[in-house]
Every structure is written in C-alpha cells, then in structure tokens.
Length: 164
Image (cartoon, rainbow, N blue to C red; front, side, top):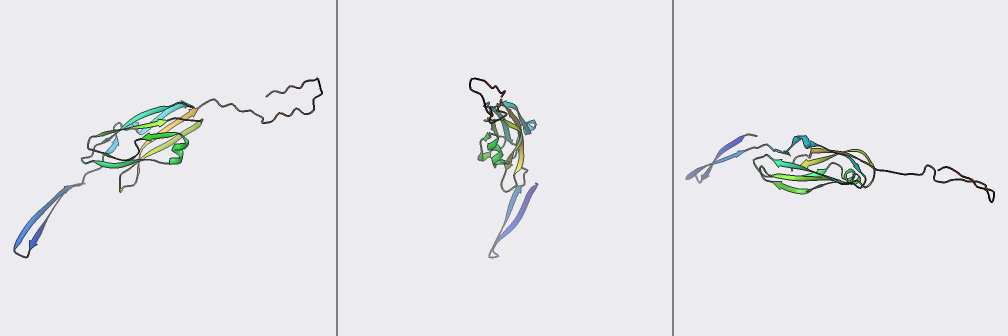
C-alpha cells in the first residue's frame, strides 16, 4: 500500500522517443461494520414462532468501490436455526456508501444456544468473519412420559386408574 510511479520510454525506429509516466496507488480495503460493537449480534431469547429482525449497517471506507459477497459460515446451520440475512449475493459499495444488512431470526422449534458467523468475501481474498450471531429459542413442549399404559386384567364392573 503505497504510491507507485514508473517511467518507460517508447522508441520509434530510433527517430522519435516518448517518455510515458505511469502512476498509481495501492490502497487498503476498508469494508467494515459502521458500528464495530455490532460484530457480536445477540438475538436473545426468542419464543417459538417469534420473529426478530436486526439491521446492521456496512460501510465502505475505501477510496474505491468494493465488490463483495456475504456468505453464511455454514448454510445447513443457518437453515436449521431459521436465520436469514439480506441482501445476499454479489454487491458493490461506492466509497462512503452504507449498506443496511438485515438479519432475521424466525424460530419454528425450540433451539439451544447457537453461534453462527456471517463471512465477507472480496475476490481474490479468502473469506473473513464479518460478524457473529447468537441466540436461543424457547417454547413449551409437552411429552408423555410413557408411550403405552398397560392396564393388564380388569374385572367387569370394576375400575383401574393409572396416573399419566
């Protein structure tokens, strides 16, 4: 990441020479969350059937537009936990432009604590972690302790009671 300047000479049959100057600058990539405290996004405890959506702004602090993708760290875990985010796919942000990223947790069943990561991929670099998602889903679940109640032999006209 520095300024570059190179000069090379074009020679036309030893009759005419032209010096060409090529200048450029290597710039750092600064695509990040607008609020670094949101790198750890906690949905808290959500009831089954509940719906929580949180918006996290992403900002491009680079001098040039950046084309990138947001990817789930593990697609099967995201679908199992009913966590989605939008937009997904390839996007381009201009310098100082902000993109609102919506992350949604909509549990359909009870879930234990989960930890998921949203990855940021800028070609040709390796994906890196943009943010971590945490949450849990609670709900009421009723189950029978025993699948079958065995009454055995019962005399006609009498009664047998069992607790379930």
